[in-house]
Image 1 (cartoon, rainbow, N blue to C red):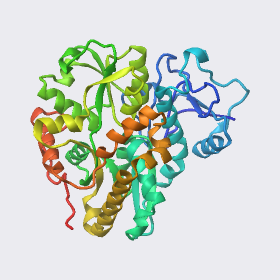
Image 2: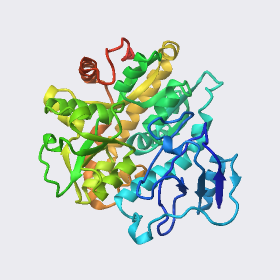
Image 3: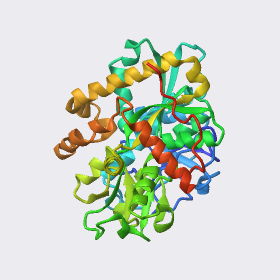
Image 4: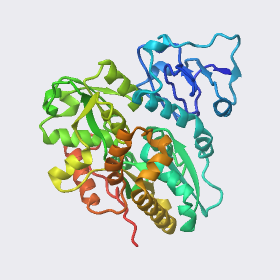
Length: 430
């Protein structure tokens, strides 16, 4: 089943991923004809154009879905698109044997991102209007990885309901799209907002605040196993893939590199992109290093092809300062927090219950919800049992101090923000 959607699909969530044509074809294929075959891309757009990716503006897109459930999801996503004429769809330019192997960790990341983009889309579209029932809480979250796993635990254990909450969940495939929708007021609470991103939003005049941390910064800098680098300084002048400074991983990288006398903005040849594309470029040798976070660090390290040069960042920062580094947390508008303090507290309690469940039943959780982590081999599971539970946060601890330290450094350097805006953190009073 194929559809052709002429022009840019404004107001829709678009994911373009090259070559998922391999055996079995379990995922849909989105192809843009003006993309170079050697340039795998995962691009996200939500009600806006992305300035650094202009090559997709106005390009025709053709979609192929092989499985009935994906056909239905695609049909819903592009309900306004007309069927393509003829039978000649876009084809991957590489033969299968030179493409991505569906069973490799790299491909699993690609498939995971594509499937999530399709299967959560109807939830994303429902999030474009605030809930009419004031007793209903609307929450946006990243539907992949550890946040997606925790939300699924909350849903399956009915934890919000146990705390008197009715939640409308709105999944997004990555933080960029989630944060863009959040500042536009598409939902009440952002479950995966970095404190630095909230500081940036406040400096731009948005009435938002960070009220509870959810994940520590599990980002690491990975390099090929046989690479000669032993310190971050060895990467000066080298090509490093990252997600930009306006991200938890980007901020963590900037702060930790600064302590090693490396200015990532000046000393490295930074390549900005999304995790799936960056990992493919690293495997091909087009990058010398890349930032990636859990559970994808575990997937890649256990292959034996990659190793951690620096990280995880929350541990690195704690060694230097005595405080771990956060990556994501809950945020909402100050106006909403003033009038919905009780709902915010109940959501925090539901999150804490989910973290407790994950820590008490880690093996069962990782096996049951492997679609979020893609950890399946014994080696992956064993490493996941060690590395994943500490990433989840159940209380503030000394994270407020860590956030303030990080923001002060960024402002002093004029990196991301020029001064620390007031009101970034809004701790709930129990």
